[in-house]
Length: 185
Length: 259
Image (cartoon, rainbow over all chains, first blue to last red; front, side, top):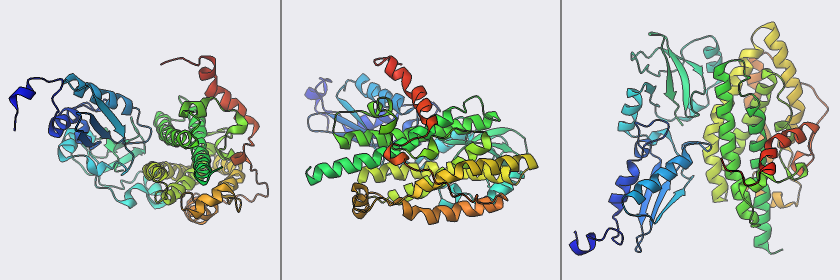
């Protein structure tokens, strides 16, 4: 319910959790800017205290992710810009972020910029056997990661790491285009 | 010292050792920037180093918090001298060629994999949180190293020769990773409280991964009687001083420098 007298004074009005969540959720990821931090699943919680103090919980994708500080500062700026400067951004490590938290919309957006989205996380996928290592060394495709350009599932790994720690470099065996694959984590 | 203060001190010391391992190996791997055999490897090694840096920052920040002396992660990384670092010697030895670096990556990532998996259920919430996150990252480091060791070991005559020589170089340093905590020490106290994990318990699962990789790489486990040790208590190799000088000189020369 809206109280008209109070809502006319932005500086002292207590924002709703929904409003702050909307502001924080719209912040773009600095490295893949067509994705928001909500798409990536790194916005974990928003709390608004009785005194109007705002707390936002973010979790890093990787321990050393260099974008963390920029994201934290962007979140503070987005909320302060709407008239709520009393914001604390907390960095939480547990539970650890997983690519399973990337939203369906986020996956769609990744594919749109030529990055193959991650498949579901399973332990076996991240601890490839030496058999797989040998298969890769001889150029055999070992996993069904679809090419974001032509859709073929015949793709091979070029390198376990790519432009950022969260991606690996693959090549399509059908159209020969290289592409980034967001690794399941 | 009160029991609470003794616990803080022990947890700080343990976190510092884990952080120092990650920090020093990160610094070594960064020496490969622009020098790896291919651009993909340049990128891969820097990504591994970045993960290690993130782990180091988490552990050093936590060590600083628990020791309660008002120090920060930067104070711990940049203002301690050689004898105050408690990393194992394995992570500080020089990179050698790419095969030697990959031999060390295999030995160390496979160790960190077992360590972080075990510590994900540590009774200390912060150590558990850092470890659970780091475990996922290290899974990729271990996989990356295993692939290279197999490719080079079971490759050409020259790549096999170099891979075998690299393994010879790093193997003696592996033993220190699994040295048991001294009975009755503050660290063995942490093990009893399920906060730390005795390194000796990690050896067999580590070996169960590394041994088949080496077999597939047609490499023999080096026979060695030499077992260097002492890094955990501040004894380091000659190479370490030069590494620290490079790591610390900017911060020490320009203490208030801002990026």
